[in-house]
Image (cartoon, rainbow, N blue to C red; front, side, top):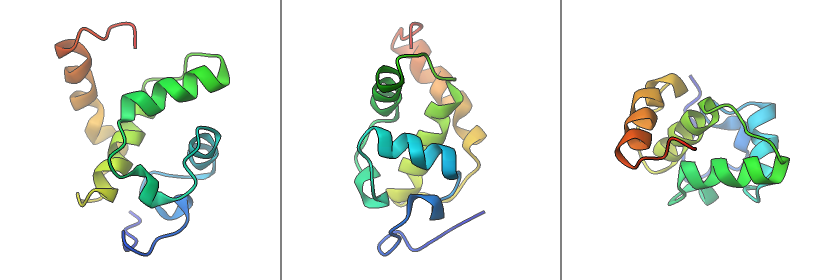
Length: 99
């Protein structure tokens, strides 16, 4: 798994779980650089992306966003699917079934 230096990484594609498609999606919603992910909310990014694309995107994208935000905020690099249960719990606890 990719583990670049959080302080100096400049390309979204260098981040764990981020390839060409997700980096393109992040740019579409205004995230150009990895450091811009710090302090972001994965659910808000997801909603921005759905609105920008005028379609509902697979919920797994939230997991990817959660994983990369976690990494940029100092967490360990983990596969995106490690965040699926956390996403489901957040949705359930906050009654976000329409997410």
